[in-house]
Amino acid sequence: MIKMQAVANLVSGGSSGPQYLTGDKSSIDAFIDKFDVFLFDCDGVLWSGDHLFPRIPETIQMLRDKHKQLVFVTNNSTKSRADYKKKFDGMGIPAHEEEVFGSSYSAAVYISRIMKLQPPKNKVFVLGESGVEQELQSEHVPFCGGTDPLLRREMLPEDFKHIADGSLLDDDVAIVLTGLDYHPSYLKYALGMAYLRRGAHFLATNTDSTLPSAGSLFPGAGATSAPLITATGQQPLALGKPSQAMMEAIEGKFRFDRKKACMVGDRLNTDIQFGVEGGLGGTLCVLTGVSKKEEFLGEGKGVVPSAYVDQLGDLLG
Ligand SMILES: O=C(O)[C@H](O)[C@H](O)COP(=O)(O)O
Ligand SMILES: [Mg+2]
Image: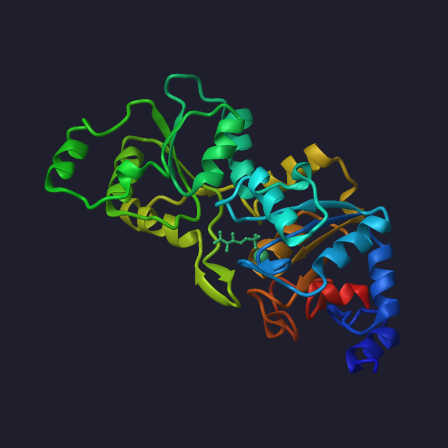
């Protein structure tokens, strides 16, 4: 049964706002044929935490069979590229580690290849999970904090004194980097604030307000940097979507024509904005994650995708 929007698309050729593709095989095929490259978001598009959405492996394989170039562009910094390869394998998604470009890798590349701080004052104090640490390691960037078990404890009275007199601080720290942190502590925030007050650069892998998981929403990476923003009044430089520094790094690594590329995502103010501001040929919003169609349908909407589907598997028709 062809949906009303599909009829509207057929009639208006898709000029009446974002094209609704679900159930419209000919429009789906025409849409896919426009692009050589698909940049895929992960959380809210492929899966919701450990829950894999329907027909994802088949959809990815279909695009591979059409010789499309695929890049997996996630803001989730808790995992490294190698971790994502394991997750893909575990879910039967045909993908390669080299095709992953996460915000933790984006931050590591920015620090090592753009900032190029000289040792010894080039260390990163991390508020985040092992994905950030692994990618800093892959770029030979020294770090501390992060998953260090010594920081997963109560703040003790003497800690205030030792942070204030600097004896608990590492003089080589030049950067504070926040990412999604499942183990926040007052001690970590106190150390992060002390380093920022000493003049350290303030970076974030991403600042998404929420994390889609288990079919619901949870505090996102933005919740990790927020206490430091409030305490210092400083804003971090975010290196995940929609940052165009990330788009340039991806274009530099995967070499593609932006006009023949499509960004597929579930979130308007990261994924779709990333594609629109990056001048990509198209953007596809998938309604299994954060953003709802009411946020982009109708007049006077901000970020609007070129097309949308109920779920990614709908691309199989
Ligand atoms: O809070 C976060 O870090 C984000 O919600 C999460 O990372 C989003 O990941 P993505 O949808 O970009 O794969
Ligand atoms: Mg997402």
